[in-house]
Image 1 (cartoon, rainbow, N blue to C red):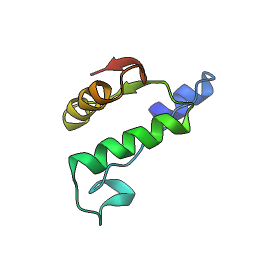
Image 2 (cartoon, one colour):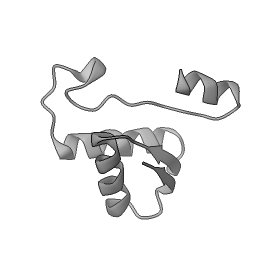
Image 3 (cartoon, rainbow, N blue to C red):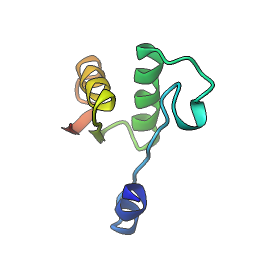
Length: 77
């Protein structure tokens, strides 16, 4: 619902599945795989984005932002 609302407001939004979650349920979860998923999603929207995460996603968003300085326009945790 959040992605649809953002797109109706004229914003590009993606909600990537992390390894072991959603459409990637059959994959083994690893931190490296999760960070790569965030990288891919940010690249998909132009290389800089507001990155949002809660719980595990918040920890991963923080770790990703440390590894990719300048990639996050903002973090919402």
